[in-house]
Image 1: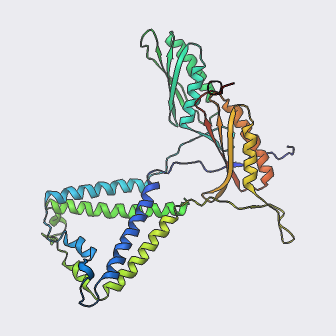
Image 2: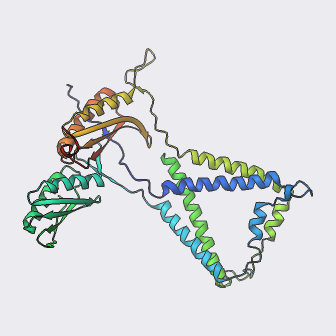
Image 3: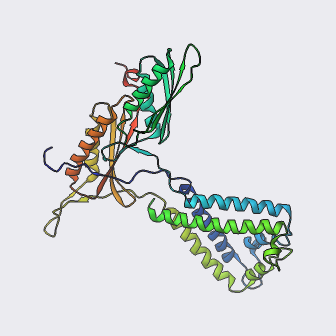
Length: 199
Length: 193
C-alpha cells in the first residue's frame, strides 16, 4: 500500500491478569443474591397474624440468630474472631491491590506483546541453537529469564555464548528481562551463573 | 468486564473487608474478656432477643419481602454485569453525513490483516477480531510464531500490517493489541514431509 501517512494503530491498554478480584467480585454478587432470597423467603412465608408458620416451617433468620443466643465469651469465639479478621485482611488486600501486569511488549509500539511463558520458549530455543548445548530449558518472569542448559563441557565459554544468544533473541522486547544461565556439563555438575544486565 | 463493574467489585470487597475486620477484632476482644476496657457496659452474654422481637413486628413481613426482592435483583444484575460484552458493530467511516453514510465491518478487516500476518516468515498461524475492551475498540490479533522466530523482524511486520489496517479502518480511535505466542516445537520436528 502507498501513501505518506503510514502509521500503525495505536497500542491498546496493556493486557492485565484479573487477579483474585476477578472471582471475589462475582462471589460477593452471588452472596448478595442469596441474602436477598433468604429475606424474600422469610417475608413471603411469614405467618400473617397468629396462624403460625405453614407446614412446621421456621423463619431462617430466627433459626440463625437463636443459634448464637446466650453465647458467652470463650476460646471458640476468639478463634472465630481471628478467622473473620484474617478473611477481612485478605479481602482488604484483594480490594486494593493492582491487577497483575503480565505482558512484555515488543519494540515499535504496535501493541504486540509476549507473555512470560512465550519468552521462555523463545529463550530455550535460542539456547539450544548454541554449539556445545545438548539440551536447554528456560523459565521466565517479566523481569528475568532463567535458562538451564546441559552442555558437553567448557561450562564458562558455553555459558557466555548462551547468555549472549538469549539476549540477542530477546533484544526486540521493549524491556528485555535479565538473563541468567545455569549450565550443567555432562562430565560433572559444573553449575555456574551468569547474570545479564537490562540492556 | 468494564472498569465500572470492577469498581463495584472493589468497593463491595472493601466494605465486606472492613465489616469482617471490625467484627473479627470485636469477637477476639469479647472472647478474651477484654472488650470491657473499650466498652465498659459490654454484655457478658449474647442475646438475640432484640432481633427476634424485630422479626415479630407487623411491618417486618412486607419490608423483608421488598428488601429481599431488591437485594436479589441487585445481586443478579451485578452478577450479570460481569459477563463480557465485547461485540463491536459496524464501524462508521469518516465522511458519513446526512447525505449518506459509509460503514465497515471492522471485524473482517482485522481478520484479513491477521491472514496477512499469517503469511509472514516464521509465523505459523494468526487470527484477528475486533472487540471492545475497557471502553476502547481494539483490533485484537493473535499469532503463533516458531520458537526460532526473529522477534525484531516480527515486530516490524506487525507494524507494517497495523499501518495497512489503520488505513483501511481510517479511524483514529481503534487500538491494536497483538498477542505473540511462541510454539513449543520446530516445524521440522512436528511436520512430516
